[in-house]
Length: 391
Image (tube, rainbow, N blue to C red; front, side):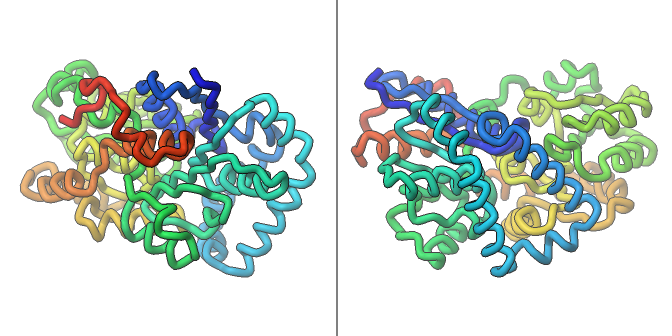
């Protein structure tokens, strides 16, 4: 080790941003010759233990009860200005906590997978006139202006359109790399065949299987959809993920059907995707990137206004996803898709075309190159190839 410490920062536990940060950290640890100590930190736990969960709960309540309000304010320039001023105030009020955390972390560089983390480190760089290398990893298929800070040294984006948006916002071209949304290495591998994965679930190996997810909070009409599929699609097997939503988990368990498997928050998503023919989900950036890496057809439902609407539009336009606006129509649509494989195949091929299964590896080599001050450092790195092979 040469003393280089890189902090991978995310906002809240259990989020896609955390999964992305940990995927990058673990990938970096596969390059021991880089001499870097990588670690991940949650802002809510380390700096904002009271304020962070409060904001997260307010956000969930707002999008659940009044999504139209969030949609209205999401791109409003006046709201953006107010939010930036509010964040500046919170930053000032918590300056002692921020400095204490930064001293404890003792990091030489920062990689942020959430805009709040990016803003915090950017403001701190500006305040103390630091030259910390700062990397912003955009975890959606589009980028919002809340990510825009001149203190960021490197942006990693999902696609060319995000890069174009950043350039229009004033970010220099040479600060932006289009590498995809980083996901864990598990999603570029298939540990078991589809039949084996289903047998591990005590499912029939040749029966069509659907995976249903709603993010770590179990958002959306997951129980309603599960009941529909179980009752109306006689041959379908269903895997339903409740996340951290305990009431949803209990409702799903009460269905008590032999063709249903219920999980709460789980780290086994990769294996469950291996068992599925398609995924029904809200369009979170990281979970959809994971599905693309698995070449898993997507059926998108109930996008959160703003960022997830843009994710859904991108995936639909690229031909990798279908959008269903009315949950009551879902069983008919899913039954048709599973009875006619020729409808699923174009979705799978589109997923294969736009997937970036090696995004984490490519991002890590760029990050190390930035931290080491050596643009050619990527060519010097060696990694065990079997760790990161796409099937």
